[in-house]
Image (tube, one colour):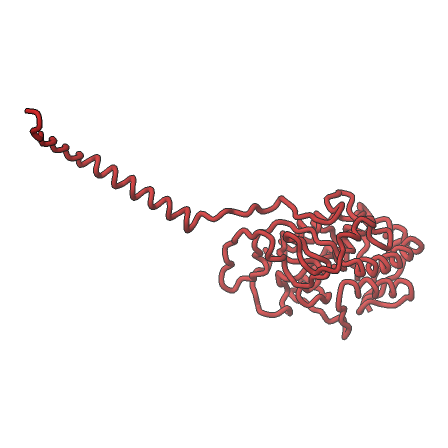
Length: 317
């Protein structure tokens, strides 16, 4: 009858399987949201991929270090500001280690007692030009060495390699988690180690200079051989060291990346920064001492260079 209220039929309850499925879907959705919110951080890409800011730094030709000054187009990049630009290091920065502005891919912590310097965090290579003053100082010493070699030891002179590119150096630094001293960078940008088939390559104190890639490879090999942190630098090896030359018998000249001085690690299980009472405070000082010894017939620590048959030989005094 019109006007009468007809009661609505009650809805049938959902089957048990439908209720269970709906509950599972809600739980799964909440769980996925929690993962995204807490754990799913955006990953920063690691090498390859370079930060490169100053003009021409992407060139495979590297710097023309045969001139006393850097190329003119670098002048604008060098400035009075000490700030880093998007992870690129300014020449005035002196902090040890790769800048925190560069993306970090978190690595597993090394086991207790292990050398943490041998397990650096993965980082993108960062191109950082050496300070102009250091470049001029390094070039000045290399010109002295090259002049003497060309006149007295042409066979050794011919083993000097061409320049490394800034990217090569940056890649080696990223592999090691260390920043090379400016003097070593400038030296590699002039001579990327040596190239030789028969003649013993030129180097300091009877060792052969390595390429940027050779430095990183030797560092990795030494870390694999000795990965224990003894808390001092008198042990045979520490991952903070930068090996830049080898003698073929398991010995390497190294730069302490923290202190900056030059020492030697040898195959007998020792590392020393004492050259018979003489200390070599930096790579630049090693260059100067070598140039002095060649020109004046002097010595570097307990080593004395001489020319024999067109090559440099080093005598132990």
